[in-house]
Length: 112
Image (cartoon, rainbow, N blue to C red):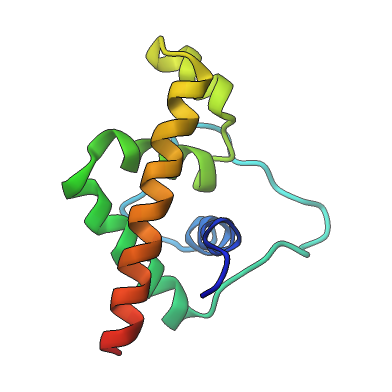
């Protein structure tokens, strides 16, 4: 199984390069001068996107944190300040959300 954090980082880059997705840029996006960021194929990106979308129904706060962290490139500390929580609380929710997404990605890959 691929490393879920690498996969989500690549998903964040992939979804940030998409036009017309449901994800709105709530925070300024960081762009690199040379594009050596990990990216996904459209097929893999759609699988991860479905898994992240399923998280929204299971854990809305986890979904918001995943989108902010991986797509918006916002740190756990900054997210914690925004929601008036400790960054460790945010990191715990992020870890739980990553585990859920990893399970869903594995499930979706088996079905494919």
